[in-house]
Length: 253
Image 1 (cartoon, rainbow, N blue to C red):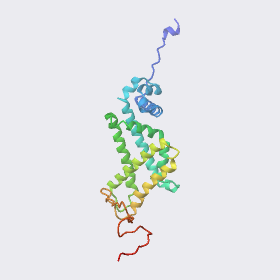
Image 2: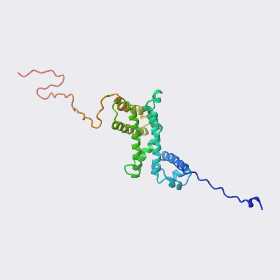
Image 3: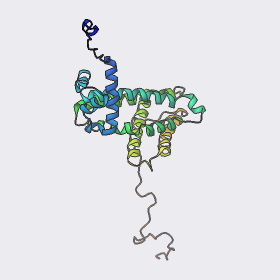
Image 4: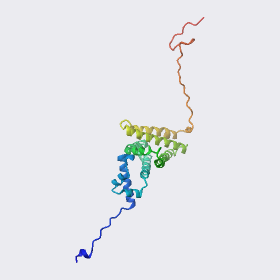
């Protein structure tokens, strides 16, 4: 009897990776797949293949493609928190940077991700499942910026959460619009233009307001009175009138 017969070899069991490891690999693969192919053209098969796992592994961890996007968007909010922290850090100003420059650099660096998020968000109006995920993401964006605005105006004698929330909405909308413009025309809408646009809004709505004693009524702004003809030119054809520069004629006796 050989030693092999006496001690038969047993197949070595294949160790399954821990669940958290599987989810991490799937989310990483999903992020890469979405950035490469976009939301619409990416499938769960693509994600599983890139992660080196079965499609069943995807379904055992996530209910849908939308759920995967939702988890990735949560990570984007964490990233946004880090960017805002850097933008409002005193060390940034000490090094010659500005909040607008930090935000502009981040927008350029994350251009591919921003483009994907917009593609996903564009479906929210018609797809309830997408809207259920995208709406909280937008609200979280505004909340992060609003908190930063409140911190920036902490020393102002006229603190107002509603005003900070309004500015937060404006800044997020401007940032998203600039991101779309940069994706379409990066030569014209470059980092310099983006920084100037963000810096102008932040200066007018945050920095200058902090130094003013009177709060503008942004909830019901006064209607501007328009004068369609501020410098009317008299019609020389009318009796008793002459055109500009026309010498006065003899008066009727």
